[in-house]
Length: 257
Image (cartoon, rainbow, N blue to C red; front, side, top):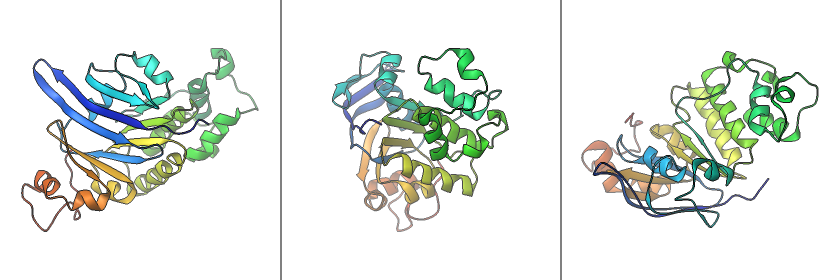
């Protein structure tokens, strides 16, 4: 397992046909952080992650582990140790949990070798199964998993690739309370050895598990700090509630999805 690395974003700007979706954002995510990106729809959260992973062209600088990412291809960025999930889990539903992880791990094996049944489980795959809590379901088709379990499997598919930075887009969307709790605990375990950035709308989930928070609004960084610091920021209260009232984002979860 490689050491976690930090993400340094400086004056990041993304524009589409004259519209600026990300407008000069500076962001510094330290190694091993569990950083949450929050903000209303259209704030620029997903576009920022798209820029980091090479899906959209951007100006400025994005450095991971000291290496510049902007200008690299999607595949080169992925090979540098950066992995991403989307709001809908992408797994091979006809294959077993173990086969999904085997394919993700790759390791130069043939497709037949990865798909056939076998008794030995590579150590990285076994470790990922334990981390995501799916060891007992290793032989089950991925399509039979519960919604939350599919999300965990997709995270496991990144773990077997020795990803050092995980970028997760609303990982608990549609989950039950118990699944959200288990997912938060999973992210805590993962961030002990990796850097994790989570795009999230669920404020209860953010309050329970974020180590640090960045708030985006209209393509710019509005506020940053601990959960308590962000919740107490009048600018954040204004964006989420429309006025700087005593009843802030510390109260009932704000749903901006």
